[in-house]
Amino acid sequence: MKFAQIIDFKTERYDDLDRLMDRWVEQTKGKRTATRGLIGKDRADGSHFVEVVEFPSYDEAMANSKLPETNRIFEEMVALCDGMPTFTDLDVVRDEQLNAATVRRFFREIAEGGDLDVIDEVFAPDYTDHDIIKDEETVVGSDGIRQDVTSWRAAFDFTFSLDRQICEGDDVVTLWTWTGTHKGDFMGLAPTGKVCTMTGTTVFRCKDGMIQEGWWHEDALGLMKQLGALG
View: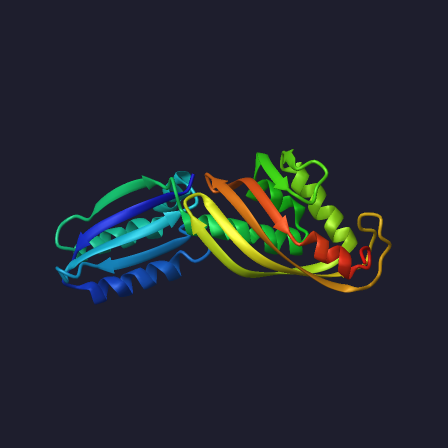
């Protein structure tokens, strides 16, 4: 589970502290486990600051805190602060931007890039897939995604243009345009060499940073017309 730490502190010497943080970043390059951090200043009190640091997990955060560079920098930070900083540890239970990034990994690394090993990092083992183009509309298990990607990549060289993404709660809606060159057998059609486009919408529901369920709506009829399968 993703983890975040909130550090609340007061200082009249923020410029010195800012330089201290730059030094810590340089000294821990390649070793620190934090994935993102930001510092905000209280609009009502210019000496009051709050830092939010994100980690892939609690264990990664603890590994980061045990770095000798972290201990040294913390001692210097305390010397620059008015009083002892306070820490709040948070297990992240919802992160819409994380969900959007996870979905983009599917389109970029798995579908376009063909890296099937990433499937186990992105999709839950009991992932449920709904796709109107399939004979079996509902398929359970991440192996279904593996089979789909393999068959589409065998039939086409393709890319996705992610036209728009909308995040709400656990859902990520992606409006996309697919462009592919027909190079292999597709639904009984021999390769035509034609360059085709198809628009569609995918809704992915995420849970604990992984894709749990998906709904696909694509212009399959338009694709078949471009391939000459329909009049």
